[in-house]
Image (cartoon, rainbow, N blue to C red; front, top):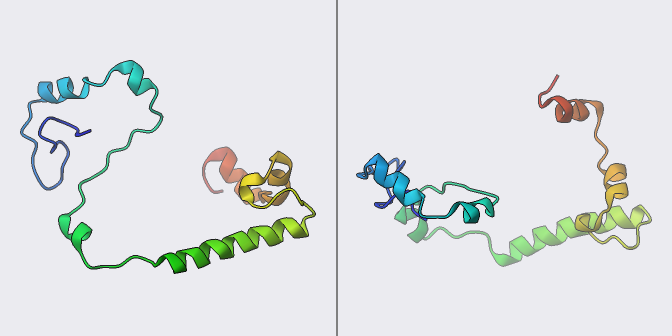
Length: 118
């Protein structure tokens, strides 16, 4: 959904021509009960056409596949060395495995408790 009728509210490149009342009215078109069911609200800025239409190539599927397979191999080795035959990847870990394998050091514990490094 656009942020306002013209679509340029908060746009860094083009000014919005909508009156504040029009923006408010437009944004209230979505009902409250529907908005209550949406967990994540993010603003997505405009993407320049040049970035979308350029000849720049991303990674090939083969390279991505190799990287994913390497991560899976690491996980497979971790769990086979740990004696957990029913766990194939991180997503299969239960609370016990998380506490055992992902144990935090004192410094990390402090960060988690206070939200800042000591």
